[in-house]
Length: 379
Image 1: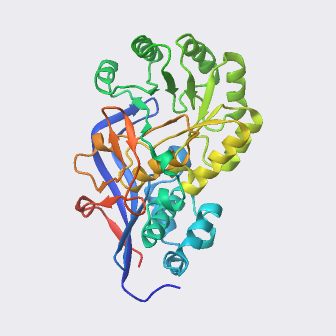
Image 2 (image 1 turned 60 degrees about the horizontal axis):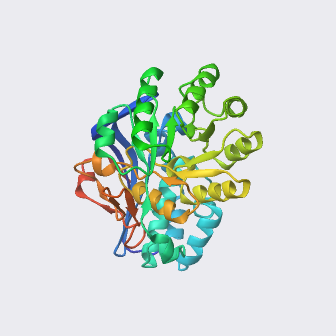
Image 3 (image 1 turned 90 degrees about the vertical axis):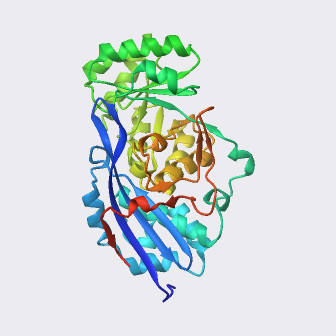
């Protein structure tokens, strides 16, 4: 039952310049676009975040805001302030947001509300999320993370400044001949043992992909990510059969239904699990369980320019998934000199490993830099 003491929950629409641009074949990003929820009650300050991308899930900051205006806030608050926070958290992680919301909104709206709920409930229990979800200490050793070479960063600068390299992702540009020069330079520098992922961001046709993936195979590229328009499941299966390339789904993977169809048609070998596009931590874990069942590989990915709770939530997911073949840690520390939040997880860029989130809840602490952004108070 909800208490009658003062409580505040607000949504901030964040559109924040990045210190450097991030580019790929489909887009060039210069600003963060996130919606951040903040909650204060009974000495608890908690937060949640989503990062809607219209080209991935069809959602925008405006659509998320419109859905938040329809939330049954009394029901949601009753769950957050229940006398049984352990039970509420267990139900949420096992079955998603249905009990807290009644109706389920689209993925990013659901993500922001779920991350906030997890943060509140774990803070009420005075426990880090990883501890409350019973992750043993042995699984909390620092985890290696991938380095991402986007089109706004030269290959020479990348090699000189971003090592050591555990796994490398290369973002496709608009000229494939130039991409091949980049890949040749990277493979020569990294040797044959380092996994290289080539991320096309849905920019190719099947005819182009058949020719280009053969060239990628010649350069020992291990995985091509999302080469075709979204949900081209039959064409992706054909691409793998004819070229021998392994495919990772990202934009085409936003639900268990997507995963089931892709597995049935043998469209891919790997999933890219990103918390925001999937609708939260519980759905990401559900898809990882499915992947384990069907023998699919997966990585823990990020949205470009996550700026608050999503940073720690994604890194939390990586420690919950020891079978993930790699993790993307994001570049919030490089993008935002005046951040709106301080993550509790840390990046050791000398060794390129993630130090596990700590503190209660996710441990993300908001800063005063969020104050100027437009916000709406819901209760």
